[in-house]
Length: 383
Ligand code: AOS
Ligand code: ZN
Ligand code: ZN
Image (cartoon, rainbow, N blue to C red; front, side, top):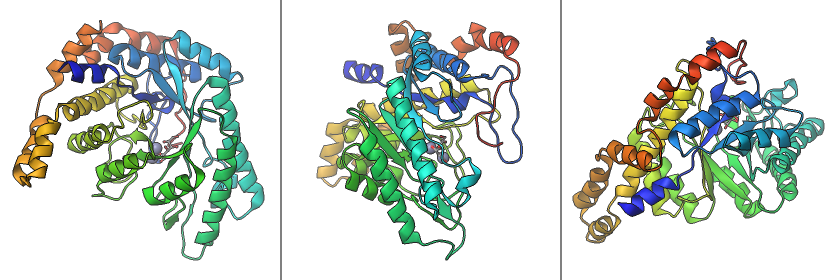
């Protein structure tokens, strides 16, 4: 139990700045009270999540949604709040120029503009001390024949190589894949295999990020995790839940068992380290945002605790004996354990309230920001 607690104490989950702003669907963005008016206030809200959970010390930024004049100053502000800047997320999807793609666009001028933005993101990493660039490309085509699939791979490889060459010591990029949306016929980085192949070619500073919402229904995500980890190519996660497509709902809400299976493979594969970034990529369209993030962090923590509880020796023994039911039972015993008392105890040992949701609700922070902040910003999505 001491080992499990020590492992849980070392856990780090990164929250995304965009989770704190207003968001919605293409149909409607429901504005909420007290949402941040600028990146500085987003960091303040993220600091609340860390204050109550103790395991969310970094915040991912999104450029240009979090554009400021002085990034070093933003990083200083974060430090004062007790948090740090995590991954820098690029945006080559919200500009009229990118209608036919960004780094894979047929026009070299648009490709240049997109790659320049990615390079600017590395400058921001330098200024903030961030070590991770997260690349998601909305690039793809809607109709057969619209553009040449193979040439688009060549253009993608060329841009990635340029960005890779700009990375400094201790910096890396994570390449994100997504089956579809906004492109509906062929996405240029549709799956882990495509992302993996580009990253292998580039070298050790390029790794794959697994967004749990970006797969076809029924995909065995923990298999992908095991495979990538075995090869040193799992750079991190964008955690969220999905029922249908890329729903960006709270992680662990739709399928806590899947989250447990993923965390088990992470632990089994030696990925429970700072090398793998455990990030949330979520939007809270109808639920309050800070509690939504606290709940999500707790869901990951619960899945992790259960995965740590798996009796690995008993599991190996059953597996080696070909004991199908016995092996399955070992895994299920861990999953079916109620870890909430253990986590409450752990928090109290760390000087935290045992119930982060209740403690935040009682703190008065929401009432304060609702009164102080008028005219909060949209997260960037669902405009
Ligand atoms: C989009 O579907 C992806 O999940 C990206 O990670 C996206 O860039 C992110 O949600 C915001 O930066
Ligand atoms: Zn994502
Ligand atoms: Zn997504």
